[in-house]
Image (cartoon, rainbow, N blue to C red):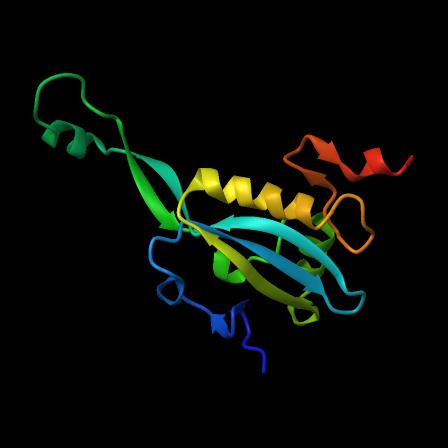
Length: 152
């Protein structure tokens, strides 16, 4: 049984942040394209921060000493529920409405941004995503590219 817009995590399907372990900043995932079996390994943060400018009225209401802040940082939930990956092939298939041709599995959750990047790299190297035709990944960290291995 597959639930639309759900991530597989261990033995459950996840559709809400509340269903993930407490203190989860983000996760490492594998998206599989079912017709070919090719996979994509990536990371996704559950929240992102944006800046919002204060209105003139809000600026006038600020009290205290020192310089007034012109912006406020706001944390918003990311699009993680509907996210499949950043690879162009995946984005094109999703644009065509072919979400049903993919499965998504969370393989590791992390409590911080730094660990999210670390574990993404760790798993990408562990699974040899650049050296194997089984993977859709074309680079790791924007520094190591699949095309570099084509001549080997």
